[in-house]
Length: 129
Image 1 (spheres, rainbow, N blue to C red):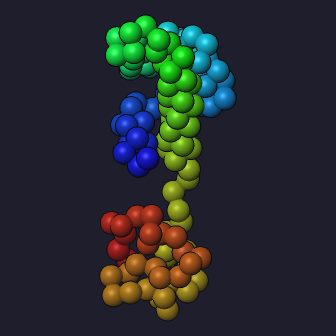
Image 2: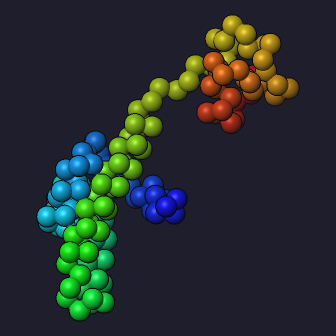
């Protein structure tokens, strides 16, 4: 499952948040064409359509239902992955360790904060006091 999500993390982030449920419904009903219009992205047209065509060839025309289900899952995971990327980009940076009242008592030799209330050391590996 981790490698499946890596695929979605490599795709470009959408411009704004999209509903996962709407994306799944659009993917099921309209396939890659619907997803391309909903996400406004050519990548989201190509990938589900290519998979649907391949399933149609392999299953000799009976793959339309599996293709619709695939497009539904693709739309849901694509929207979720993009929304998570947008949320991460919108998060404010953590406060610097200098603002922590107990930074000097809980720092290791390189200035990384080891206290649970000071997240700087774990979110910014290049941080040094």
